[in-house]
Length: 415
Ligand SMILES: Cc1cc2nc3c(=O)[nH]c(=O)nc-3n(C[C@H](O)[C@H](O)[C@H](O)COP(=O)(O)OP(=O)(O)OC[C@H]3O[C@@H](n4cnc5c(N)ncnc54)[C@H](O)[C@@H]3O)c2cc1C
Image 1 (tube, rainbow, N blue to C red):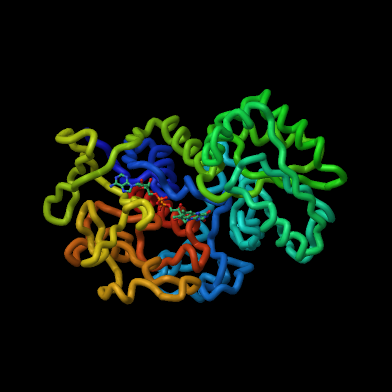
Image 2: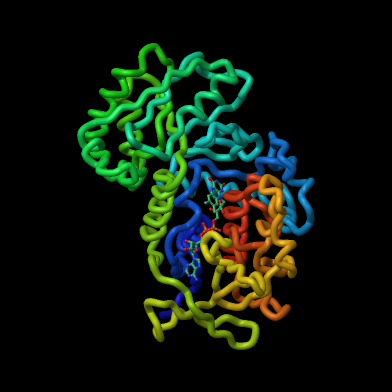
């Protein structure tokens, strides 16, 4: 099978690069092995949340000038290079049915599942997002959980809000369909709940919520509604008699899985092929060019392409592997930037930035993968597999994924 571009990895970077290419009528295929980081996403996208030492960043573009030259943003030309790349993101999300709020010039605050306010760039419309922590929008909120749901912690959230002068009531509700699901304490997880939220169940749940919220001005609820699209979440919001905002949960992220499905559907609408649940296992090179890849499911029926984008993620998604003898890129044997000595991979103080977070595939100035010190002419690299960024310490995960994905797709369109 022959394509213009084959993309390895269907997380945020692979899917969005593919959308740009497919919308320009390039014959595009995405091969993706399974769960991506989106499956655990908070419902917020970060561009640059901290200075790397824990201090919150207010204006991400301004703060980019302090990043080291090895950072993907610096390599894209700093704010002047990144800003135009990100212009495509808002319209792309809208076309996919993903409604977000936020601005790349000024961060807002999202509320984490453990009650920490974190700087964010874009947040799903249905989730808590605050522009100013010194002026909370509510005097009293009700945090309402679903009885028996264990990945949501009202007490942590209450402490965070009470510290800022908000009075909090904590409640838990259920309806028959959800209570019946709770055969054991491990069975009522976000995915189970989301699947049960038909219109009738949502309406019944809204009645239970309305019965317990008293004089609260707003309701905070775990983000467990809407796997395929946001309609269950919207229905609950409109059926509850006051503003309801969702808070991300620990464990599997229902809004994150939904976003991945929405981007995948958009890509398929544009005519691209998505090989879900398949894994690229090997590449076939002629000199410095990658001619084709083999996948586990297709076997000898190779995928040939003029261009490839490697977007297989970091350690979490197995785009990188760490064994006792070193860190490697397991499919193509690409050059990796990583500390040689295992003792230098991590800091023993868990709360400090971890060196391994910046490990990744080495690339040339055009983000072409390096193999044996030489660029692979037709293989660009995008997203979390790139070296140089620490998405946790900096709060830069989605920004790096999206900016480098747009850069890879644009470079291919220009070639
Ligand atoms: C658990 C977790 C939660 C996060 N939450 C947030 C958040 O809330 N906000 C934020 O801004 N950032 C978050 N991040 C940072 C995140 O890394 C980026 O935001 C971004 O989603 C990374 O996208 P990606 O496409 O580069 O990689 P990934 O999301 O890791 O996707 C890589 C994909 O490639 C596939 N793959 C790997 N190897 C192969 C192969 N050989 N063949 C085919 N497919 C393959 C994987 O299965 C996976 O689907 C989070 C990261 C993690 C690990």
